[in-house]
Amino acid sequence: MENGICLKGSVEKIKILKLEETPLIRFTLTVDKEEKQNCLIRAHSLDFLYQVTEGNAIVIYGRKNKRNQVVVQKYHVNQK
Image (cartoon, rainbow, N blue to C red; front, side, top):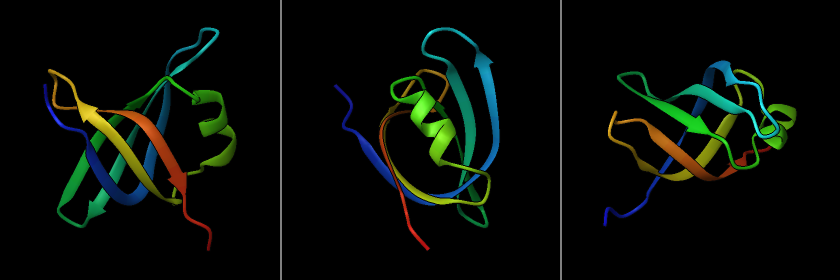
């Protein structure tokens, strides 16, 4: 079983993929200028939409899926 990964960066390109009781949200996490990760979040996705806007700095914890996307299990929004 693959270990989880922890990344810190800024949020870009928030998009709702499936609008259901618990929406599926895709966003890009820019870790540094050369590394960008495509991320998916379903758990706590409504809270995510409420708390996070593009440009926010966040820390995420999750795992990679078969498409090399990070499936977010936990996140924390950094306060400015």
